[in-house]
Every structure is written in C-alpha cells, then in structure tokens.
Length: 243
Ligand SMILES: NC(=O)c1ccc[n+]([C@@H]2O[C@H](COP(=O)([O-])OP(=O)(O)OC[C@H]3O[C@@H](n4cnc5c(N)ncnc54)[C@H](OP(=O)(O)O)[C@@H]3O)[C@@H](O)[C@H]2O)c1
Image (tube, rainbow, N blue to C red):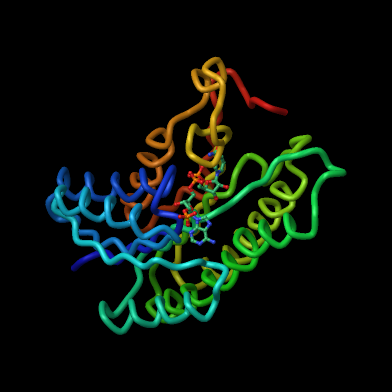
C-alpha cells in the first residue's frame, strides 16, 4: 500500500529536502512506497522537484497553492482523499519570516506572517486531522523552530507565530493520542535555506543544512506505528546564532 505523504512548502529548503529523503528512503526500503503530494506557491520549483523524485522512482502530485488560501487547500485535501482514499502523513513545513527591530514591524508584516504560519497551518491541520481521525492512523509533522520556545530579538512576529504553532501541536496531540495519530514537533535552529537570503560566509559555515533535518524526519516517520518521536530539536553545534 502506498503511503500518501503531503508536504507543504516543498519547493525549497527544508521541505524540498524532506521530499527527496522520502523518495530516497523508498529506494533503500523496497516495501516502502511513498506517493508525495507536494504543495508550494512556485510551480517551477515543484516541477523540478517532481522530476528529481521521479528519477528516484517515486510518484508525485504537485499543487501550486498558497496554504493561506483555505478553500484552495480544502479542495486539494478533498481531491487527494478522493483520488487515493487516505492521507498518511502531513508535513506542515510551509512558513515565512521577516526579521527586524521591534518598532519597524507593520500591519502588513503581521498579516504576511500570521496568514501562512498560523492561519494556513491551523486550517490545513484541522482538515487533514479529521481524515486521520476517521482512518485511525496518520502522522502530523510540524516544522516549527527553536523560536517556538525561545525569544530572538529581531523575530517578534516570527516567534509569535512559532509559539502559536507549538500551542497547536500540543492541543492536537491531546486529540491525536485518542485516535492512533502520531504528532512530531520539529524544532530546528538556523538552517541554511533561501529563507535567509544572502548570508555572510562566516555565518553560512556554522549553519545546519536542510538534509540535517530531513533525514531524521523521514526516519521518525518510518518508526513502528506503535512509537512516536514527539520532539526533534536541532541546533548548530556551537549553539544558536543571531540571538
Ligand atoms: N531555515 C531555518 O533556519 C529554519 C529554522 C527553523 C525553522 N524553520 C522553518 O522551516 C520551514 C521551512 O523553512 P525554510 O528555511 O526551508 O524556508 P524556505 O527556504 O523559504 O522555503 C519555504 C518553502 O515554503 C513555501 N511557502 C512559503 N509560504 C507558503 C505558503 N503560504 N503556501 C505554500 N507554500 C509556501 C516556499 O515557496 P513559495 O514561496 O514558492 O511558496 C518554499 O518552498 C518554515 O516553517 C520555517 O519557519 C526554518
């Protein structure tokens, strides 16, 4: 039976690495056959990722979509269930951040951050969790951040949104434990991805890479269904940067 795995923000960075590691796992474990439902807002990213996955022998479905557009996401979820009958895994990875002094944040920054990180993540999780509850199986991953429990000076809105995601993780876990659904909160520190834009060489050298996060995420999914790793925390070996 194929494992239907939906990954948001799959086009770049950590989400892309998770998709590729799912595809690679299927090569190493013959009985593991994922089908990847890949979501992000840039079609060309999704097309190139889908072609890499196909080369690794993994089937994909791509959706150019914004998780903040909840009716669009409801259609994607319904279409996935109609076509494949189930959703086994949701990786809530899509996320955005703007980093500045406290006094510089605008209403538009607030809307930009919260509509993806809070509103989009909540309503997608709500709709997929209902399916998993009915199936009595499934695995929800949330790629939150160390900023979900620790303050960073220039990250007021990002920290708010990530603390909010952690709140959702902890509430949904109460429900998930009653219906055999696994929940994993993934909290990385600084990972070198397009989210950071250009970074100086000395900083880049100490940052983690997306594959440092994606391998453990896929291994967590592959644990026996009786076991869940509830939290994964990753930091650069020298500790957090940009505090
Ligand atoms: N990099 C880090 O240091 C770090 C550390 C801790 C946690 N995280 C978290 O890890 C997750 C991934 O971050 P990343 O560093 O890989 O970021 P990234 O390189 O900017 O990639 C984010 C991906 O999400 C997509 N995306 C963003 N908003 C979206 C939306 N509303 N709907 C659909 N897709 C959307 C982006 O593509 P489009 O713009 O084309 O849609 C892109 O494919 C985020 O939740 C982030 O907060 C990152």
